[in-house]
Length: 477
Image 1: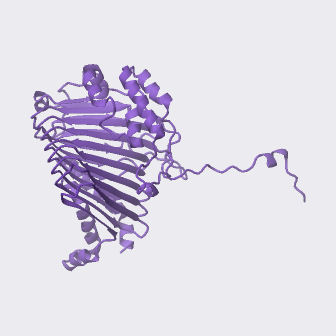
Image 2: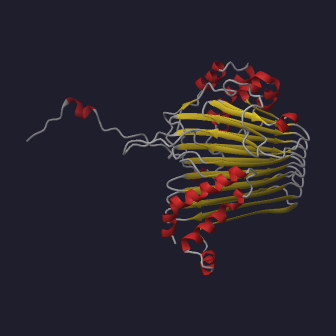
Image 3: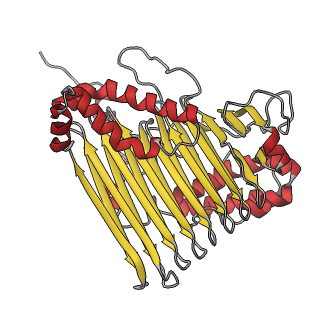
């Protein structure tokens, strides 16, 4: 039997999907048209529209990773956001009441709360103590209406974000929702402020900014939660849930002798792609304490920039990752010492189940002006299955030899068998012993969360993640 090719068989060759490079961004919506639409449709002032366009130009020209040492470890192929649509119009206060109200319920143990769900503000409550102290907590939209000159001083020119980072410029140019927290000089808040972001809608992109400014001598604690906005979405057998994007910044400015303790817990859904950028300017005598936990998301890329610009400034940063299934975490920390007698202590830890991967990268830079620096960077990975992979790359760049300390340390490996032996010798079953070792490894962040309810919830999340992946961990023993 002879089969003759029809006229369409030769003219319609089999097409293959276009393969993306590991460094290719998984979306295309961030263009000049979107930057202009955000300014026009939101009726933003001319200076803000110009700032968006300036950021878009920088975004379009920058590489995804400027540090050549870290470039080989970028892998964005797990993200699929080609159909994602960014929010343009968003609410700037809770529906039906002004943002300055004391009405509504304040979570136990907090001084103020703002809760944002996708494109709307669900709750914004300032406690009486915070109001009396002159604390301001509002969205960028509300600030534009109430204090346009003040918001311009904070945002115009992008000084609170690093100009050389592509994803930071993405936030600067294309944010649709922002939160602004300002604490006046000399104010001490006895209870933390809670900022809760909720996002999980498939094929939507929520791009956010959080700006935190503490005046001279102010002291405060801030808890940030990033959680799903609804229950997990179910698909038919063989189908996958389309991904969504959450991109958030935290931009911190600490004036002289200010003190901020900030804890952040990210537990977004399994179909979310998460980009984070945190940038801190720490001035004379100021102190910043980061406690960061990364649990959720399909792919997470996080960067922290600490700039110790004033003499005697101090930063302490602890970040943990607990990954499972096929999650990928790409975490980078940059600490730049410019003032004299500054101190930096940074610790990153990752525990990985199943086929999860983590890249822990960090760079301490000590400028010539930074006489008397004391700085340490530690990165430690714990592989809990044979297929898990962790990479740790700490590094130093020192231009000032007069340092108290400049050091880094790293290790990657399985659970220490000596620790297991000790616990088992005390009558603890092997599965329980593994759990104690892993959760103890991650405890440095849990212990630093300043809000009891959030600390308890973080422990519950870690317990649940361990239970879900304990089988894979046992097989690696």
